[in-house]
Length: 324
Image 1: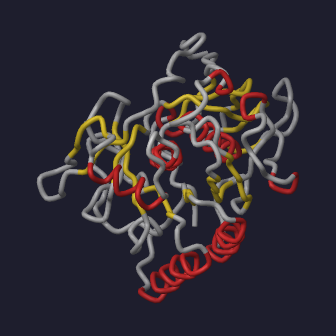
Image 2 (image 1 turned 45 degrees about the vertical axis):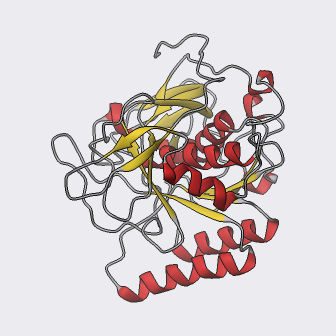
């Protein structure tokens, strides 16, 4: 399985690569306490790992073995890491933007290029299920033409729910479209599997317009903002797919259904701790009903409309929202 990051490698840099930014989010520990913060909810994600970051302090629960590789600190002369290296750190930040008091466990299975064998993903996902995560985020996926492969992946999901019956699994719908070429409705796995919440992306937090690069199909359950989102990132020099080296200072803007899925996972954690507490499955049902949506989107006439997950509002003010 590979991380479905918009544009890597088939799109323009502005969509496909994480762009350095000076924007910084308000400290999530300044968020109002009590309801709607995800307090007590544990979200797990299988990814590239996580890099310690001041903004994430107290929110991630990963072991040192799950830390991401640290890019070169400097001047471009030293070693660099590929752009996907900060994927897990970015995902953790997005979840905690939506549920600032939740815990996020990033289980490292993907390599620095954002790829892994399905067996590695399965092992990491099962580890998180046994740890008791209530929401499992899988911002990764692949196509599987072989019916046997699909059956193996479905068995994994069934096994996860056997270990943790109340856990919900959220997965990215994938990014196979491009400018003027809407993405395929072909099933993308594991998002299209039974008992998995598949999340596509809309263009902006206030838009119901489907992102052209986001996969779509009858198997997609929700949409969420996934374009040019700001989140935590690694510090150091990272190499893009075209050989360019970009310097990051702990923050980036990035686009992809990976990030829409993380927003949805965080929203589930947030809803679980509302004024009327919900189970993870009840929170998913509430999102799918449109009760907590910013609208509905229909990518094309052949696909049913799906609700768009509404972003939390406390963290939307940014200190310096200008791209570097």
